[in-house]
Length: 156
Image 1 (spheres, one colour):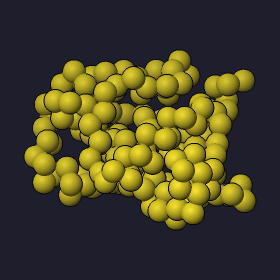
Image 2 (cartoon, rainbow, N blue to C red; image 1 turned 180 degrees about the vertical axis):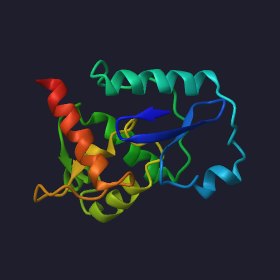
Image 3 (cartoon, rainbow, N blue to C red; image 1 turned 90 degrees about the vertical axis):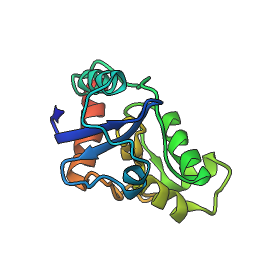
């Protein structure tokens, strides 16, 4: 799908959205191994596209599309904790680690966020460094900054 931050590719299994890829991102090996890649659009992809279009138009601040997350139990825990960071807000990697009861796992949390398969939907762009610097983002720092500014503009 076309978006203000480039082409996004959505991949879903029958259970839910499995991956949101930025134009420069390859399909993760874990998804290729599970053979869930299908070039046909399904209802989950249609729902995700609609919700993302609403998000980019400033009409949506949370997502309800079903997810089918492929990751370790720790990664899934980290990814699900992203839903607790409100639209337009930011948290540090340290705050996120503490929120899941793992205050010393800051680097592991950062690594898990870097592997978030459904960025934007699970808003890892809202996680920044403790010193206020932007941190990393699998979709690129420019896109992370755009998403954060978009949410701030939408709130005002």
